[in-house]
Image (cartoon, rainbow, N blue to C red; front, side, top):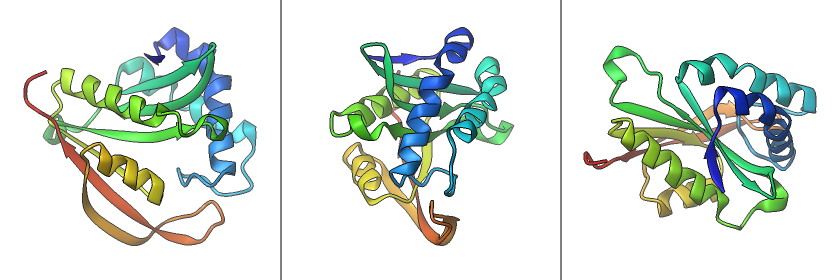
Length: 172
């Protein structure tokens, strides 16, 4: 089941979100953190998202099975005045124990539909992973460009980042 977290349910989901982030980074996900990466740091990251979730600038989606959070993505809607037609996808994460079940694909489709319903016409994201790139391409995303040495891997080594975009239909 995919659901959007509300301000209230976000608080209750903090431990589950931190668990998915922590496990994903330990398995190699390049999503802004380097090793060593403690569970407390993962929780602090999510706690830092409270304000943006409460304001509606960010919408956090989760995939649950049996009540447990197994995946998440964030749709960033809060953009400057000249970018209100676009949104951004961030932190597409699936717990390593729950991969290859279509959760990332379902999270992405729900985020895209939510962005379209909000009037967004273009979505952007960046990724360093080859598997993630293949998922996004299969969902109709296109490569805008590749920047070498853009971010550090979890091991602190500079790596390329792929910037991608998807244009959404005008009709919701």
